[in-house]
Structures are given as C-alpha cells and as structure tokens.
Length: 310
Image (cartoon, rainbow, N blue to C red):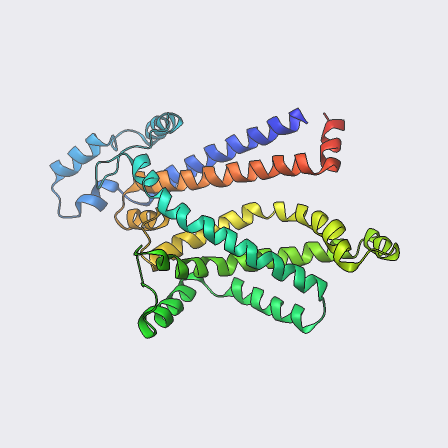
C-alpha cells in the first residue's frame, strides 16, 4: 500500500510539472508580451527595455528553468499590468470564488443526490424519465446562457435581484443557480447509476426476503454502497465547478479568480494567467489525490488488495 501511495504522489508531481511546462511554453509561443502590452506603436528602445526588465530576451529554456525554480519557491512572478505579485493578486480573489463555490457545491449535492435516488427507486416510471430529461438539459444548456436568461428574468423584467457584482445576499442566488444546474445534473446521473447497480445486487433481494422494509434496505444496504462510487466523480465535479465558475463569474461580473483569469488573458498579463492556471491545476491534482486516498481508506477490498500487492 505504501508503494501505491508513493506511486500516486509521483504521478501527481509529474502531472504538475507537465502542467507548468505546458502552460509556460504555450503562452510564450502564442505572443510576445512586450508587443502585446506596449502595442505596435511602441519604440524599439521601449520594447527592448521591457524585454530586458522581464528577462524576455533570455533563451526560452533558460526562462523556463528560472520560472520553474521560482514556482517551486511559490514565486509566480509579477503582474505586467499592476506590478503586483501574481500569486498575491490571484489569492486576493480566492475568497470571493470560495464564497460562491462552497454553497453552490452544497446546493448541487442537496439537489442532485436525492433526484438520483428517486430516479433509481422509481426506475422506468414518469419520475425517472422526468429527472433524466432535467439532467440532460442541465448538461446541455451552457452556463452563460442560463446566466443570461436568469438576469433577463429576475433583474431586467422583475427587478428582484442585482444583475452583477456583490451587493448583498441576493447577489449569490443567480450565480449559484447558474453553476449548480450542471453540478446537480452530474450528481443526479451518477447517483442513479450507482443506485441501480446496488439495487440489482443479490444482497438487496436477500434483505427484502428476510423481512426488512424497503426503506430500511434503502438506508442500511443501498445508500452506503452506492455512496462509494460517487467519490470517483469528485474530480469531474470539481473540474466542472471550476470551469463553470470561470464562465459564471464573467457573466455576473463576480470579483473572483475566474474573472481575473479572463481579464488577464485579455490584457496579455501572462504571469497572472500562468499563476491562475497552475493554481487551478494544483487544486485539481490535490483533490484527485485525496479522493484516491479516501477511497483506499473507505473500501476495505481495495485496501486489502493493495496490501497484498505491497
């Protein structure tokens, strides 16, 4: 088991290094920051001074090694626009993003899991078909379209909710609904699938034949076993949440990391873009690693298999 954990940590580190390299080279190759920021009308002396200041005239491999060494020391460079630390600039936006993502995740969980349980329990009925249609719609409709529709209805037409920014508690309602639509659909579909697999297991028939009520069988036998597979979709859920957050924050002018990322891309502030992408990648890698460790700890079958293969 220790060997397995070390292997997972090694793969996580390699993935992170590949992400850093891909982000660095893709942004460096795409455009010249000096020309993008100073503009085509800037003089040759100004462009050369800018490149010298930010070491852009060094060979690309040397720039990467310098950048990698700095990143390992949590130094992501300085913003081209504001001359602030890129890391501090991104971290200053994290509270607003977390204040939106945490309640959204809880709301999606509270909506999606019961819907999936009901769909599985009422499999083949109108309830099942209705929930399936809603889940497919949740996947299919883009976040930005949902956000625009909500703004038009609740802000423009009814005037009930503020259309953008953080004004008061009402500002959270439309962004949460926008992001939670796809997340609830994810939980609903996977919960239904996991529930059906457990419901078809012989132990359920045995428990019912032993005289246990359907409710007790559902709570004692089905739900705990169906909950394990849901851990495996945490990475998918987190990726969808982050991706949806970038779109949603820009639709509602939410002052979070997603809006900062898009603003930095538009301003060609590559240091902030690199910092944002790397931090998002670290979040995804750590989350998936923790999920694997939790699954190993919760499921005794997997734990015993790893111990035998040690």
